[in-house]
Image 1 (tube, rainbow, N blue to C red):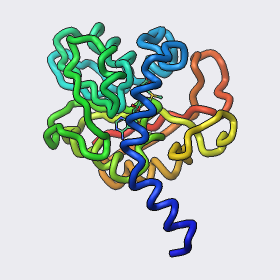
Image 2: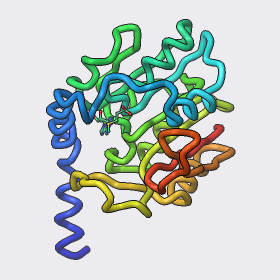
Image 3: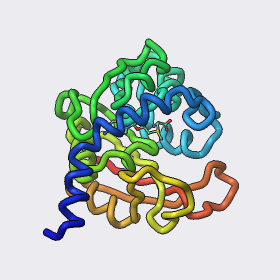
Image 4: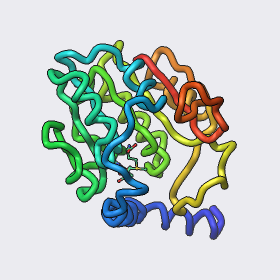
Length: 210
Ligand SMILES: C[S@@+](CC[C@H](N)C(=O)[O-])C[C@H]1O[C@@H](n2cnc3c(N)ncnc32)[C@H](O)[C@@H]1O
């Protein structure tokens, strides 16, 4: 291993504390890290569509931030138990108390194996650093037949936005491959914020059935 690889490895090893600090501070920035999202936005519609009817079921929002997606899931399915997991307590403090709020890393989820009917991660996997482990955890907590959605940015659009040094964007095949290790059906598609606006290449959505 060369010097640069060793330095990168050392940087990544201390990343979780740095990342938690970064997002604990970022929680004060409501403009860039909003507590709510318009339910008409395609990202939300795709998550809801793929998760299906969650009446009386369990779902987990992994890397939930202020719980803007989880809040809508709970509003749509009041009898669902919705776990909202995030590394940063300051983000979680904005999430509604009717969610099960859990401060933890997506690379080591304190949720039982096969305990969820569905799990999703929106713009959070890109911060997980150990991406294969985070995808494995996402799949581990979901029951056989359960649904998974990941929404994140495309590696092909890398450079379009400023990013912290640990952030990663993904190729379609890369995440499809990681999901396929743990699930029986996987697909992906480019998406935009609005269903009637052609995707501009920034966002991708991955779907899986375990
Ligand atoms: C860009 S925000 C997205 C939040 C939310 N999913 C949304 O769409 O509003 C990224 C979130 O991922 C969280 N995060 C970063 N690394 C994480 C990790 N290893 N485990 C859990 N959450 C993490 C951050 O604290 C932050 O709240």
